[in-house]
Amino acid sequence: MPGTDSTGVQDEDLPGVPGEGFTVVLAGGRTVRARRLVVATGLKDELPEVAGVAERFGRDVLHCPFCHGWEVRDQPFGVLASSPASVHQALMVSQWSKDVRLFLHTVAEAELSDEDLRRLATAGVEVVPGEVAGLVVEDDRLTGVRLADGTTHARSVLFLAPRAVPQTGLLEGLGAELHETPFGAYPVVDATGLTTVPGVWAAGNAIGFAEQVVHAASGGYRAASAIVGDLLMSDLDAAAQV
Image (cartoon, rainbow, N blue to C red; front, side, top):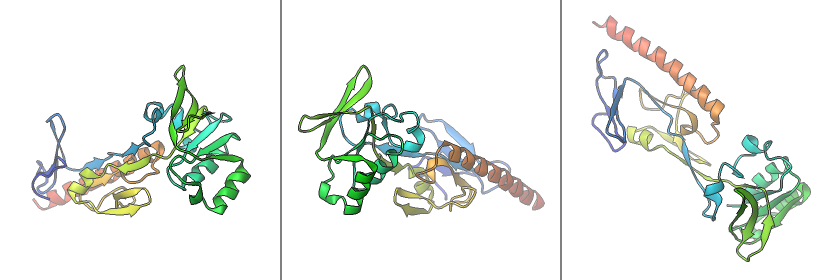
């Protein structure tokens, strides 16, 4: 892919093997050159626009029961709905607390199916209609969820589902093929993380929504191993042609 595009990445022949190489232009103006790339740009969490949510996110406003459920177990949970699919999150977190309230927020109660309501009732999850106006914080701790009608529900933990936005601009600029998932468009990769662009690998949340730290580390290892072998074979093939 000749030339420079808006991603700040440019193909460039580096010493050793003609036709290989990239120049990455960093925000500060510095350039980094390499024969292969591993893109690990991750994703961005877009949070609901509820007062206090952004400030508490990662502390007592959480998104993943598997990441945080044990640490906050047996506390009064709230779940902030963003769609009818939030029923699933409320049911999941009910395994870590028996005091769970699902705040429907902008979701109408009529949008919940009979099966949803049956499962919520069986799990002991209370459904709270009405828009959430903000959080109540005292002594730097979440103590409640305040509805638009002024009522407050005492809660110590609030779970929600951020909108995951893949940071694929760099890969798209390089021409990588993407595929749609329920959580956004991610690059098509092989078992080592190689994208459809020769010489470009991807790892971590750059390739999928559910790639946690341990998966990202594993993906980086697989990409690095593949790159070492790829560079070796490329050098040997180039040397054989001299």
